[in-house]
Image (cartoon, rainbow, N blue to C red; front, side, top):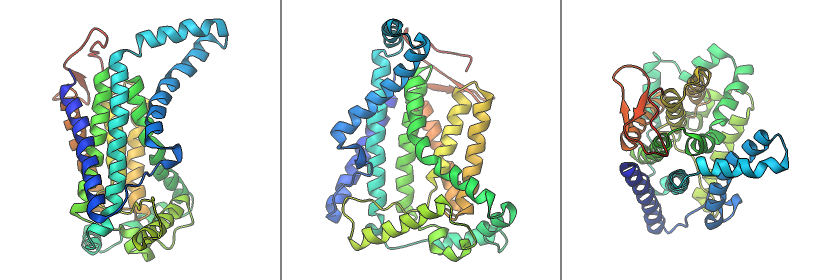
Length: 348
């Protein structure tokens, strides 16, 4: 039923992991664990899977039992029996493990980029930006439109919201998708997006306008996003100098994975959820993220366009692999296969 999704998830994880290891060996570097604060990988992966299990069961059990201890055990067992089937557990374990390997490999391959290529295409993309804006800087135009006070902080938090959004969204679709194919759809699409993002970094290396042309953004206040950019720049310099061991540098402009992943989430919400409020929230989040990438100088216009294309490709390929049948009209789809444990819902 999920053979193509299995193949893509495992295949991408294996290829990304292999490329990260090969590049590390060729460069005589060590693989870094960007999330090492959670402990070693052999401990972290069971923790992530176990956390997904408990996040679903504990709040639900406490709420439905109204805090009455004698009622908790039957509610807990009923949820495990009806929801945490072997198919669900397979989805959660495969989704978490394959995404984790893909993401950690992505972070390492991104970190190795300055040692693989010293070529930068910032000037080319900067000139393209100015041509598209008829001689103006996109960032300065947005500063004039939105100002540099309240909106600077609002867009800063929108941009930083991406960091928790990635694991939270993945967990939501793996654990709570009402059809397992939706969980495979999102997990597969995520892995494709991070892999394509890695490829784009090597195809067109850039720093991004905020670092290559920092003077354009000197009128912005000291927002959390500005602090993050400064921190990433300092870390990049230290990593290149060899002064930091076990730390990754995270500077690469083309393409924008902020745009790619936030659009991917918005598309998944649009196609798999019924809530109009959530659809509005995540489409607005995507729009604000696009503005934020240009406003703060994280990306050029071409970076955002490439990120959007990555999202569409990942979304479609992940959908096909997980057995979705796309309607010609309307923004929805439905799975093409079913099991007795996971019925197809045609009212998506």
